[in-house]
Image 1 (tube, rainbow, N blue to C red):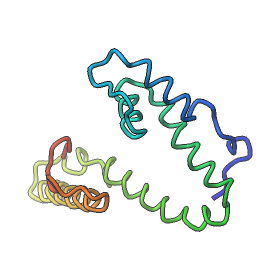
Image 2: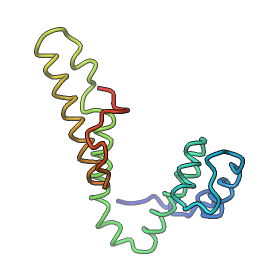
Image 3: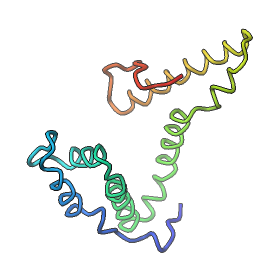
Image 4: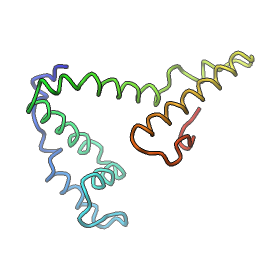
Length: 144
């Protein structure tokens, strides 16, 4: 893992002050909470379309971690990268499900069912890993 030199800077757009400023700009929204923690502030910003600022906040954390202890970051990076790869595979699908099960034959229907079951199992595992056990196998918001 080698972060390019021009990206090894902490961006002001993702600073705590910037996040607080953007959060305050939504003070008239009904879901605004006074003295909210940083996670709630970030989720509210995402909800209202401030994606770049939230991205910069998390990017700043990783860049700071890298700059503070490059060796530890590089040792942990393969694990983090593997987790993200798993998440992307489960979100985007292992194969194009529509085309994989496009036919009308029994084989195509079986493949489609197997891919759906595999996706549900992966979602359950990721939820369990993150500590969420309620609705562990819920298929809400999952398109198979």
